[in-house]
Length: 114
Image 1 (cartoon, rainbow, N blue to C red):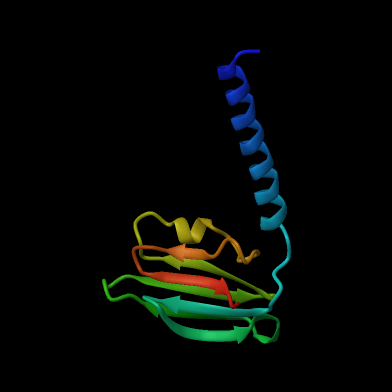
Image 2 (image 1 turned 90 degrees about the horizontal axis):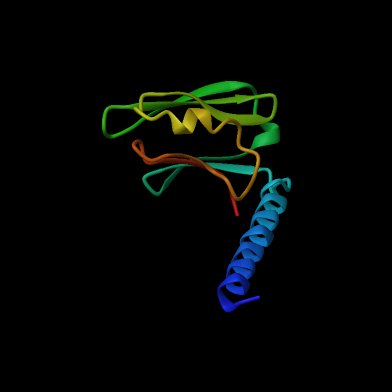
């Protein structure tokens, strides 16, 4: 085996191991139940998710856009947004400390509190 093939095999191995670790850590349940809704670095809401009643919260952005945050059956998601890409809506429910829900155009982050 030459040096190039060995280096390629090592790189593939590192990427494979890293991917498995990321999947395992990303699928773990969060250590906390407290959720924060942050806009432009300011915490707008902080609450224990399991204690919240079903509700929707409309959050206006400085750019004239908005996000509608839905809390239902102990889960939280962005159900509607005025941003063009809709990544925050397609993110689904918040289920991991490693993957917050983010809306970059509206500077909104929904995450588990540390």
